[in-house]
Image 1 (cartoon, rainbow, N blue to C red):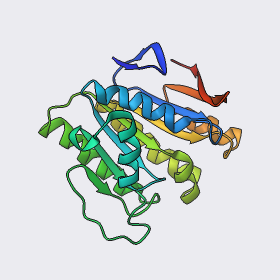
Image 2 (tube, rainbow, N blue to C red):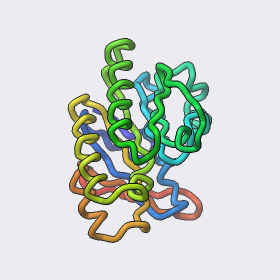
Image 3 (cartoon, one colour):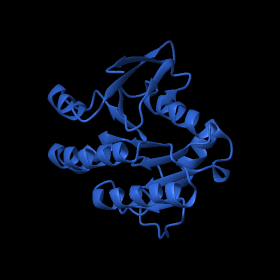
Length: 205
């Protein structure tokens, strides 16, 4: 079971669970996702961050605020930003570069490579995977394409007995889009800003 740390202290979910983290801008969605992710990292689990918003260096720096020095921990990143900016980069054992957030084939391949690294080389059977964010994917591709990609992605998480976390801006997309995407997830965490702190309510957990 994967427990959700201080975000939902009484809650734990089964391996293979995919959770959508939804809320308006600046409500603290990514903070909530990092807190759930880092709870696993601090317990010795693997963490994979698929970032469509920041490059790997900034992502690891931000995550380091939660876990200390991520270079010493089993943390991998699929960076969908750096090459799109025109920077010349090479993949490493912990950082993989997709060409852009539109490169969903590359994202899927790199996710599998990092899972293989954690499972086969490091012997980590419990892994948490964060996709930040679905909203960026929808800026580059249509709903049908993103839905198909997420269908495969969530299936990969389930087959690996991992925990999947997916951030989405609930105000950017209409209700029909959100309801279509929610079909792919086992539960939804809705985040609202309450007095400057993220407040979480749940559906399906």
